[in-house]
Image 1: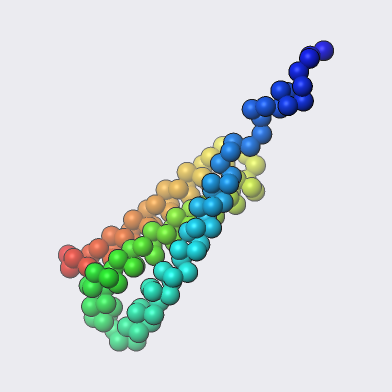
Image 2: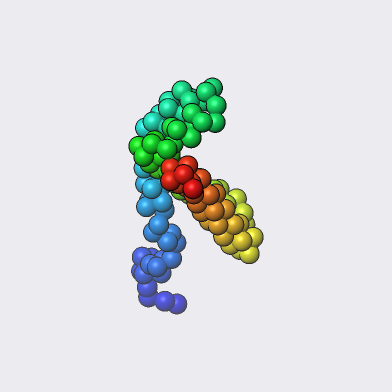
Amino acid sequence: MGYKTDYARVHGLGAAGEGVTHWWRQRLSSIALIPLTVLFLFPFASALGEGHEAVLALYGDMRHALIAVLMIVVTFWHLAQGLQVVIEDYVHGKVARTALLLVNTFACFALGAAGVLAVATILFGA
């Protein structure tokens, strides 16, 4: 029989303490996506029917390219966070969960980097 209090028996067990930070980051990224989506879609929609050259000219401008890069980065960051929550909640095997979390991180990073590289290629005319 131990003489520990209830608090002493459970101290150090339970949550990792990262849930609130993760929740706030996902909310902040979703809030950031609201103006970024508007700033990205209106210029893109205006150039959409005008052909390839109009889109190249649009993203050849530094302001539009910067908004596109921010949109891509925040979108894939938000996607990675959301998929992480789904994987942690619904995948129960430790090996499968770890593998899917690694694939999630790598895929979101790779797709985001490809998008940023595409915009940079248009901007710098390589």
